[in-house]
Length: 471
Image 1: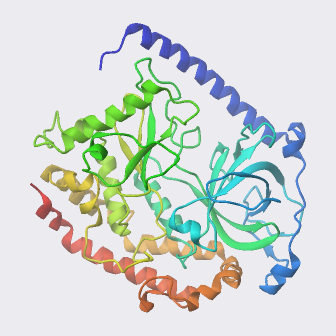
Image 2 (image 1 turned 30 degrees about the vertical axis):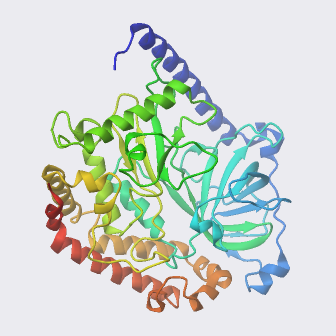
Image 3 (image 1 turned 45 degrees about the vertical axis):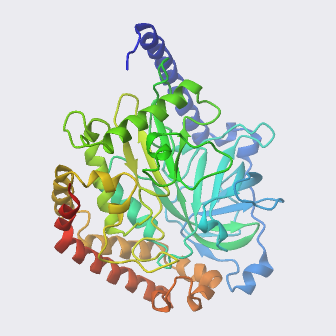
């Protein structure tokens, strides 16, 4: 697409200004963290948690000591799905240095914030999933960035509470494995959570897929012709957001719709929205054409093939049938190629609620884009070679089991406390098929090991079966 010199010059000026502003804001964040006495009243005066002794004692939790960080959320409003309400967020053991604290101690730091329940099917679980945004104050709604446990200074965070996943570890393990071989994966840290003084168990504080200095680090400024860095998600149709009218969606060649996540609603221009729509459409028109595998004009012109291969492998290892269908994130840097990032492994390794998974299935072979990509023998060649290479390192079974063991050790006594609240679910068939429901934490770990071993054995023997899909 033709770019005018004036547009490029203006863009460079904007970028330079943005870099200076970003650097200044980074220094400001570091200053505020190192000099809390200089921070505004809303964040400098840490709260002393008010615990619900009656509730916690009923579940035999009471006041306890922990070496994990603790987050306290308090609000006088009912926490709803998708509608943010005001709250206070406080952190104990914000340094996450392994020291032991009593949960009735004064917090290290507190923030005004907004909170909402997040997720689709998970929003109906009793153990809610949350998304929080830290604020300088609730009146202005201005965002306040803070570095949660070394993950980078940002304002928005996800609190993921493992409910169906009785190991409490699927997301944590998968994100760590992805970080070993992919350009970016969400970081996460374990915490114990109280909501209005009531203990809610073990949670993962997780980076959402978003742009920022601690996140994807995409360009903040686009070109005058509308070209821009972007993040889009593929998900269930939403009534409050307009989906992209891209080629795959309009012609019903893909599943569900794509939604622009970045640039956000407040910043995106009409020309940028149209450019993103057209950019994805150009890729899809080629992908669904007879010349899709052309090395110069085919799909490889538009996507980072190595990234797509790595995404394919981790989702096949974990048996994620939603990959490339739901909860799927695509991002692109200004002037770069489209890439995918991992998200949501709670249902992985036969932990899907509504039916048992087939261990001998290639899950992405029916995906929106991957069912077309694996028609190309060159693409499958790269999957096979990359899988065999990663099996020696990241996906060595002993390596994954070591991460599982270290995660169990990291959680320590928090596992028992978590199941003081949620242990009743061991007596329920939350997953279709009673044999798929572990009756204890130990059985859940055993089931994880057995499922992973079986899946890896299948992939080792049958990864070359992918050639059966080639055109």
